[in-house]
Length: 454
Length: 90
Image (cartoon, rainbow over all chains, first blue to last red):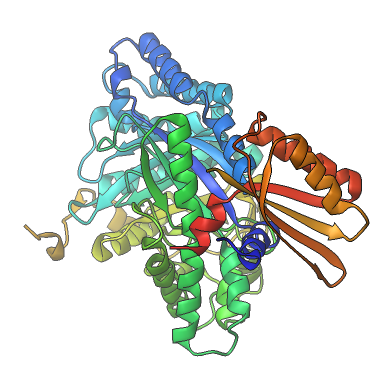
């Protein structure tokens, strides 16, 4: 029988420590929408999304009411559009019409983001994949809710450096197209190595071709809950610290499992995975940086940060895997700068640099996330930063990603405002020594030796 | 049996339990367990109830209980027991 203290504990987590279900993401396959006629393709896509997802938002609200826990976002991910539009799209403009269709469908069903305006080019690019990538700047400027991602490398294939070079320029162009809004377009574009097929979190979510026709993936989040739990073990040794994180992660993940099962039942769509990530928001008390501070750092970025993040990430996974039957997606701690007040403070204090963030991405999920850099940064420099991050993912057999925002017209020390969940960010300095000759080589970095496991 | 947890938190005053119990009785909701305490001047109550016989759907019950809470100046939440069970019990 449930006792009083358990009820109080759960409700305290929800009311005071920002425990919430961050997203219920409905993955929808668009493979059966393919047509060589662009108009027909757009109609098929709109019809399928609005049919499959018609009850998604209402279901999220119902779950919220029944369990008394906020379900913050209801979202959709679709099959990478480069594949879906391959036979109908002859120009980047053709692809932009699909982005507009996705945006329209997202508005109709009431979701705040739709992911999957994507291309998977880890080994090579087809002509349609190149067209899609070239259409990204315009697509993200003329739509509101569409998110884009490009997978440019994997442990199995190496890194497609032609794509990395191209994307340096695409990131800048995307910034230019949305310069009136602090280059907001770049906040909706993620470049991946080892991108997962079932990630529920934006902007990098897409519905992989290995997935079923439709699937429910859930991301829970509770950095505030972990932080509060750690306040009770101040000064204790690391064993106690890790045990506390594990227990808390278990409880948080159980909620995700419950919500995923319930959403799956209500929508009659199979349950895919629970993503164990600790995802911060700009709200006070909803910060991964504050957990690192509670572990014992003055600010994230101080010596010890990488070790602290490593133990946090590992303990979250250990606690989470037992709580859910299927764990997937990104699963770890997110360290976006603009979406985490503690990270912003650390940058402002001069404690956290781009290079330290890069080191941190070796031991946590995702990568260089929501980092604002000067708008006059060279395309090759951006490509160089992407290549570094992809190499970390490739060699360590993990997902890494880059979501950089070169804010046009702003320089180091200025602030970029993105609004809402995307937050705001101080512009960080970039190492401007040239990597032109490296990036311009072109071709592909071969897969690492430890990828040969057959 | 579908069980629901009702929690009532707020300043103590006369008739809180009476109000809530009357509503539950009117809606054929059976109370299985009640515990109640005062923590630093705050009234805290938890009820485990069975809503199987009630003709109203969950959202309506939760909304109406919330409304009663507002009338008497306390916060009343109704939640399905699964969330607590999943989180705290293996």
